[in-house]
Image (cartoon, rainbow, N blue to C red; front, side, top):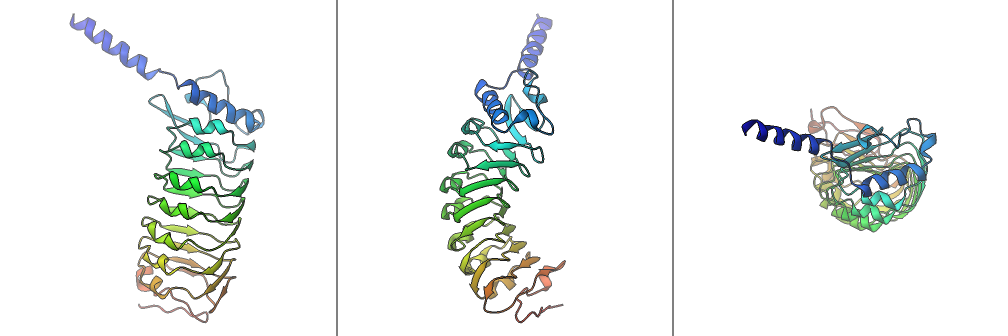
Length: 270
């Protein structure tokens, strides 16, 4: 009897370990393959093989939790079926040739922690529903063709550590409620068409390490309170319409620097 119980336990464990990914997830991956010319990817998929052997797909407990197809020659648009990959924690489709707008079904991915779509050809507005992805820690949409304003809802992403929206065609102002992003370490909005003043609320981001706002149309002055941010080690503000001229700061010992620059001077408190 004891041996029988052990055999049953072993059998059930084996069955669980070989359990298949759900049909809806498999269909979503196949839809992505078809809509982005999968046959021409640098590393393609054998659709007859088990999904956990597909390049760039991470499967845990029979759930698709990771999708990394960066630098893989994807061409086309993201299909709405991607929203059925509800267990995804990471999407990295950077450095491809994906175009079109972001499908609203991406808002279904409530477990998503990393969304990296940089260096593609996405267009349209950054949608307001992006603020529904409350577990996001990394949002990298730089080097696309996004237009419109930065949605205020982006400040709902309180787990965010890195926000990179540079090299698009974004207009309007930096959201005043940016200070809601208390975990933020990197803020990069360079090479857009942003206007208005740098909100003083940025100085409340006590974990901020990098602030990159170059090549916009920002006015006013850099909030002096930024000099109190002990973790801030990179500041890039060139090519704006600020009242004073600021140069790039890269400092390996930020706790001993004021990081407030005026008339191209740097003051250190060594």
